[in-house]
Amino acid sequence: MKFKIVSKGDERSNKIKTTIKQYLTDFELIYDREEPDLVISVGGDGTFLEAFHRYVHRLDKTAFIGVHTGHLGFYADWLPEEVEKLVIEIAKTPFQVVEYPLLEVIIRSKTGESEDRFLALNEATIKTPDGSVVFDVEIKGEHFETFRGDGLCISTPSGSTAYNKALGGGIIHPTLEAIQLTEMASINNRVFRTIGSPLILPKHHTCLLKPIVDRSFLITMDHFTRNYTNVKSIQCRVAKEKIRFARFRPFPFWNRVRDSFVTEDDGQLNRLK
Ligand code: NAP
Ligand code: MN
Image (cartoon, rainbow, N blue to C red; front, side, top):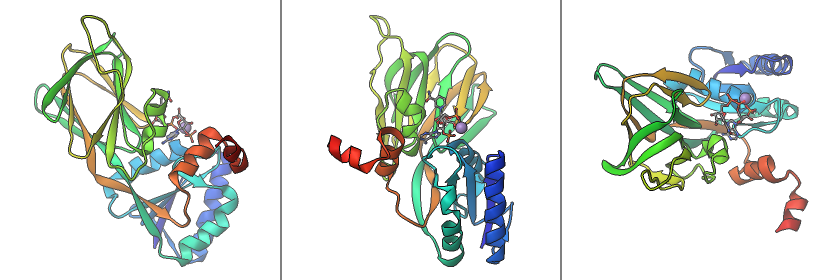
């Protein structure tokens, strides 16, 4: 099996990277930057997002796993203390794979010449550096609302605990193939009206955003941002591709949510029930 390690770049993460690389090479696994079967991210969720985008062109062949060197992460859920155990698991067992849904975004330009397609693991957001964004929101080809405000966030289920959560979105279990739309400070008065609640769209329900006022847009995809002008439409839906996680032990999603946002102490949680 071929593997690759992506480190956050700090001293601690680099040290863990060196240890894992040494152990796995001792087990006769091959370090391969180009075509890894397994990508190990060492750092935080941000590092994992980077690793995902670096190998996004081969999602059908590459599985991912994350070791966290900071606080507990949603994607980086192995402790540095568990590295030896993890290495033995990787070397000895054919791993199980768990798949999570992704978001597909297609940005079309007015000239019709260019079309950009992206996949996001967390979310895409659409904002503007000049004033408010104003666009028609279509769902499944039908006009739904005209949005005016700071922007919109379209997140995946596993990204629902990130930016989406800060915007008041719900946390969605990643077995549900869906995307969630949340508003950023929509303008609501007698002239402008939006739904105001987060919307959860199932697979095949495409959401199309069509700018009404010509603006330059800041479109974020997970951890990176791009500037677009002459945007005709931004299309969002559940992607046909999925991310594959190498799973060596169960760590249920709701436990990760609890440990990150509520408490790491089971007893305390039980007392609250
Ligand atoms: P960052 O500013 O370091 O990320 C913000 C925080 O979100 C970090 O604590 C990061 O964890 C955490 N995070 C990332 N993915 C998560 C997930 N799926 N569930 C729960 N927490 C998650 O920037 P970054 O590390 O490059 O991450 C980019 C992400 O930041 C974006 O995809 C977006 O979701 C998030 N973000 C959030 C807000 C907000 O909450 N207001 C605003 C902008 C961006 P680590 O420290 O482990 O990296
Ligand atoms: Mn980060």
